[in-house]
Length: 347
Image (cartoon, rainbow, N blue to C red; front, top):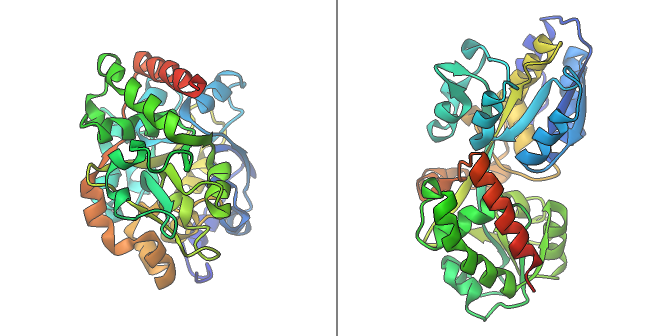
C-alpha cells in the first residue's frame, strides 16, 4: 500500500483542534497500529481504543460510562437507529463525508440517518456466509446451506458466535427474508439452528474461528467469509469462502461521533480519516480482519493482490445476492438472544 504522503491526512493536519486525545469504542480492526498511527502522526490526536463485539455489548459499555467518556463508536449499520433513538449519536455534517464515492448499496442513508440528518457513516462491509478449507470439503457442497446439516460434515463445523448474523443466515437458508424476521417468525428458526448446532464441533469468536480453520481443527466456519480467511490465505491458500445459492447476509459497520463527546471536532477528523481512501484501504486490510471498504476510491490505494483477495470485481454480484442483517428492535433482540442461549446450551 502506498505511503500517506500527499493525502487526506494532510488536510486534517491543517485544521488544528483543541483535543489531543479521543476515546473510541471499536471493533478489533480499528486497533491496528497501521491504521491509527498515520492519523496520530498527521494530526497529533491520539486515539485510545476499547474493543468490543456486538451492539448490545457496546451499548452496555456506554450505559456504564460517564457522559463524555467516549467520543467515537463503531456500530453495526443496522443498529444505528437504536443508538439514535437512545440519543447517543451526534449529527454529522453531510458535506464533510465523501459518500458520493461509496458503493451505492452501502451508503445505507436510511439506516445511518433519521429525518434527513446523518448520524453515522458506513466504513466497511462484507459477508457472513460459509468459509472452508477447499482441500477437505467438496466446494460444490458449500453452494447449498442444506449440506451443513446433511450429516456429511458433522463434527467438522464451527459456528461464529454472534447471534445476529447467524440468525440471519438461518433465515436465508430456510427461505425467510431477513427483513421479515420478527418475534413471531423467529420461532421457525429454532429447529434449523438446533440442527446446525448438533452438527457443529464448536462455537467461537473471531480469533478462535480463524485459529480453528487455520489449524485444521475444523473445516467449515458458518458465518465466515472474506473477513475471516483473508488474513490467513498467505499462509494457507486452501482457505476459501462462497455465497450459497440461497444467499448470505451482508454485514456493514458504521462509525459515529457520540453526542456526549466534548471533543467532537477531533472525533469528526478521525471519522473523516477512516472514510478517506487511505484510511479505507488501511481499514480494509487490518491485521484483525479484512473487509470491503465503503469508499470505491480505496481501490486506487489497494494493491492488485489485495483487491483480488477482497474479490473487488465480484462485488456487484455479491451485493445483489446478500441480504442485510436483521433489523432488531428491543423485543426482537431480546428474543434472538434468548433463542441463541437455548441453541448454545443444547447438547
